[in-house]
Length: 126
Image (cartoon, rainbow, N blue to C red; front, side, top):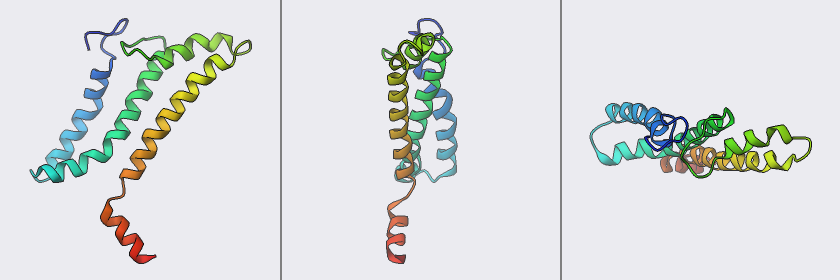
């Protein structure tokens, strides 16, 4: 959190702590104290929170706030915005990279929502 350049409190450790800690604490408090049960509930949500964290960091870059992460796709899109007519690829490719990256995390989240027991029940019905 200390290593941010312009806005130090909007860095990845802050965003991870902001979203992950309260939700995972809530899930742990609802479950039994078995490590297996807790990890079975927590692991499917990790790709969702990774995607949301990347999305928020990209939005902060679009607004002009830079993070200490070396790849700042939001800042690159923001810099290329005035040149949409002369060089549309300057904002297209970083936007496409964000879209593909977030799609991967959200598809992984959707795939982890079905447990193996639910998939076996679906196969028995079909």
